[in-house]
Image (cartoon, rainbow, N blue to C red; front, side, top):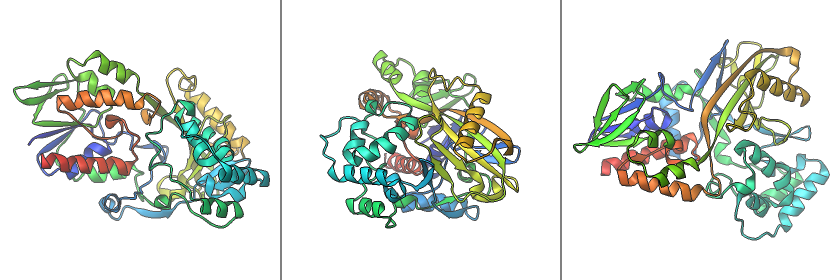
Length: 426
């Protein structure tokens, strides 16, 4: 069976790797990778988002680590939350003793005594799961920054498996200062020694036989029992196709898409990502990779320190901080100029004591249209309409923006592996 894979990001390349048969990857850009991309500027390397390599699935983790070969290093997570001028261990509920005493009491008291009705949206879930203290100090403000939407407008489909339950015992230990760990599957992670996270893409691509870059899909039709995929000049014919492209792009190139499907697609919500890199003169590398910022007055929700990975990402004697900002067209932040964004990030980091403006020696801004799938209250209704239509057409969806699910890298690879297996089974 000739299989056409539309999109050469992490999912598309992984699918081609796992598929036991004839296949070809069509990628619209000049390079593969999609969101799994590394930016290079004046000797500094940083990724679109703080990508790290981890997984609960030992087979998937083994695949990612194995394909990188010698080009990988193992790290212990040392992420922190910046709260009231102090560092807390991540996640928030695992370091309550580091809070001011009144905050510790309030978080613990409301966690133990919480009694809320079954939640109908994510804001209610935060109170239901963590209690008033932790919900209002961290969970709600941080999530409203990263998702760029009020938490009461978010659904609950994405929560299971992403935000683990913290046992009462662990929360009490945390409040008393007894060491506990949350998100243990992320406690250790891998990262490439050279080339940033994009090195993972290159390693997979080297194992894939047929990848056609610069093939921007503009039309897909069914003709004589085959799928004909065209970029406006060239055509490819396949027995089956799998789309890893954003669902909007797929619907735009299909014929006779019903109005109800287009309406459902128009109702899907996503966030774009702006990464602001600020390089500074520094003596010592950071002992943290990521710091989370729930403060509402700061546009950025997370800052990643790429000198954590040593000289492969920064020149000698320099540090780089990459602030992540989620935006939507029309929200005012999306329309800010690169200079305005840099000024805000530098001023915020200086005010919080992370840098001095006079030490800044390089800056850069990178934007990515598709970054995060947002599960709003209409998520299930809209995705059901779209998925049923695509399934009836005989097209397989695979990957974050094709399946329209918030999938981490390992989950994208898992989806690719399972899709490959199901195609082989027929």
